[in-house]
Image (cartoon, rainbow, N blue to C red; front, side):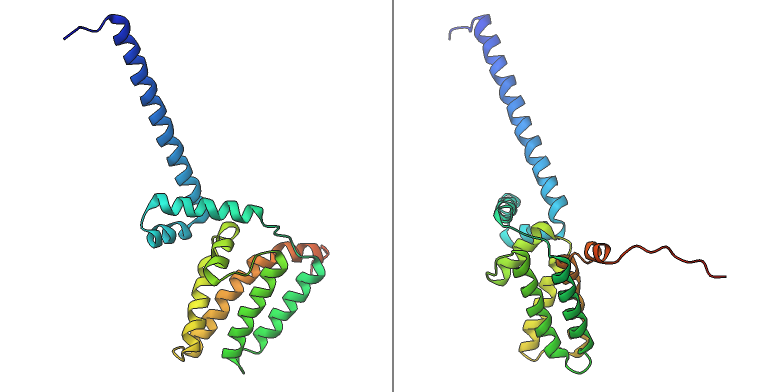
Length: 197
């Protein structure tokens, strides 16, 4: 067997070191990407990993969601539209005692209408939930829970307390999509608080 000359050994050593650096850089990049996706999507990250059965498949799905939603034209509501939606929700909520089942259906419809107005496409539920998870990961679980209760209610499996929970879940998503805090700041003039004696 021929002995390798020193230059060949040195060149091979450099190639091995460069390969190790490239490999380490790749794994560091993947780790940062995983961390970024976990931070952005919160519990939706874990749910997607569980549903797809692998971290790499889930991360590819979440990156696809980001790319898809980035192409959408999600727009804020004009203050007048936001006020109209806010009033519609208040009216709906006031009817709960007399018609809990109807209010859950109305809440679903109002959330869908708000999503359309903001620019979200109206595919099937999983597609809508996936799109919402990109910008509103903290409340997409509320949307899933409300949908589950609504479906079970259609089969007659739900009591009034669960219907109330569905409305609360829809409300969390509704407020997030409506951007209530921002709307109220824009439409409510700031007034100094008067001291009372």
